[in-house]
Length: 360
Image (cartoon, rainbow, N blue to C red; front, side, top):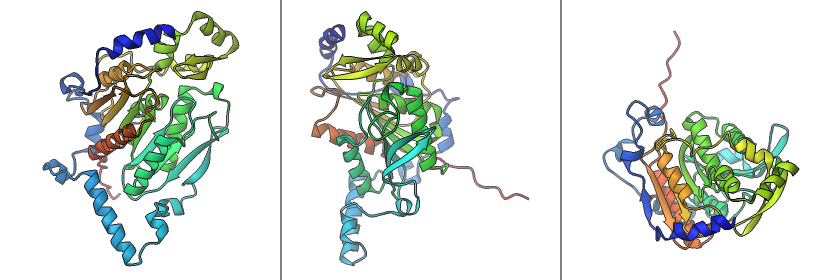
């Protein structure tokens, strides 16, 4: 850990807080391999012709419409507070504020609030973190105002989800998230934009690789793909690594917190590494926004830079915040998170499904 902390000043001296837009020449997908964009087709005619209606303008228009509807008596006061039960939440028993779903043999805790627009937004929390934090609250409020479906979940072994955290793995958490997506959004055309903090950013990347047809965008918040191999195994003292492998689990001090790290987590993660390939080698073609603090005491910002270079999409922006720590807990950064989500929504291209052919 001391070796990593000594490494941070050298990293910080290289940048002072700026936006990195991954050059199209570096990560543009080859013409013969554009699996997601080819399936989705072109943008709507308005966007194709250069028309651009901002999310803020649409929000103002909807708020004006809501105000007029309220004056006409068409909506209750509860509607104005964002508590309106849309048709999906009201009619589907899988949707609600405090829900559980049995995946395998364990109950996984989640929240699913319906909305009348696409895409849906899925929040994946950080390592050993509850799903109902300030980032989730901000995203939920935004989605309720904008009428997008919002989903958040707690990892196996965390919060109200069943299981022991030391038995959790990257593979298990990824599969639980995919199962939740498939159960809550079974329609072929319904996609999600995944907002992932820390390990949630790693898992969002894995989901986009495994299920590209369901992922319409990614917002990574201090994403830490491959942290087990590139950070823990590289910077933990040998005595602590030996303890993990001998006892099966050990508590490590990392940054400002302590975390339980298990042998099964480290071994499973070796099958889920994403930063070992070439530049542009990750076949992810959806919009991606990455936010990272230069003062991150747990994961260096170069991890997000490395991830941005390896993603095939040319629509990748990396936002570096000079004063931000790992948890990105300042109000101004929450605005940046919402803005990044809006950017993904503005660049979101729904799938174009083939027309139905009547059988003869």
